[in-house]
Image 1 (cartoon, one colour):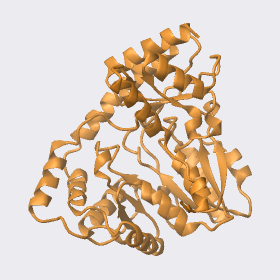
Image 2 (cartoon, helix red, strand yellow):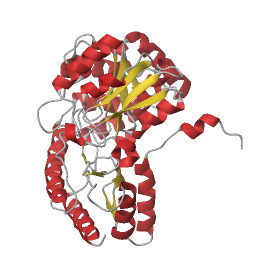
Image 3 (cartoon, helix red, strand yellow):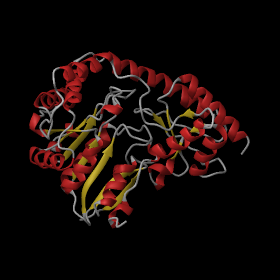
Image 4 (cartoon, one colour):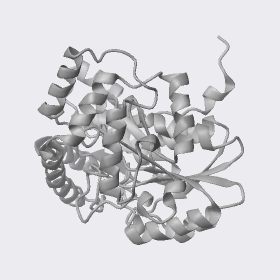
Length: 387
């Protein structure tokens, strides 16, 4: 078969590869503790599911506008005006089937082959994959434990060259759970203004934060012209399978991103969009309860990991991941990933699944019960004792 050469530049999400391996072991009768998937283990709140059922019964099963239903765009604009403290108009909002398309569309619309794009490393692997696929140069911004997995602004400034056109930020972050502070964002905003960069601010975990409040680059002076905000419903409302996300950006760019939607997906599922309206306007008790549960699990998994000889773990400020340091163990991150799954039935992810700077770390998702987390840590501790 004749395949396009640029397919070789596409990466993947290793979490799904590990899931397949884990399911294969389960099919053989093995019991596996799943700490690999970045998916809330809660059900979508009842009122959101009921809204989707009503929309189906009312006939919302047809095409909608490529940029999204006006009602949902208006609702998102009001929500972000309230939470980000800047005036957002509905014509700045583009609704997509999941938030991931915003990564694709933002880079396709703003970056030319040969441009340099700075992205967090370790970071969500699709950033680097799409940068490479469109023929741009991926420039990793190291995300270091010594900085509490925030951003070293001086290091970021040193990476900017005349060819740099685009920057990707993620806070709270996958895989580290790190949060970029208000002061760091203020300095980043100065850099962006000075160098006339566009920024993709991935804020998909903005509602899952444990100390303080979420800060957005969009809220800083001058940043509306330079920022594409990515957010969605998957993490906050346990709606991963619903595929509902959005981007907020300058109106001129929103026109072209909507055109990309027309050329790719036509539109986002209409009855799901109406469920999204109810998610934002309805009770927020579900997301609050979920975050409280994640906080308890975070504290349990951090305490448990730090009790295992050879592992140290910082306490993340957001998202639902820990990124423990395993450099004192006598195997690489990938070898440990394979060892814990195949020999001990614990599915984890190598830090290198998120970039070369992830070597020496594992990513564990605590979107699982405390009982399962405790069992998984017990197995890991026993396995380490036999290395």
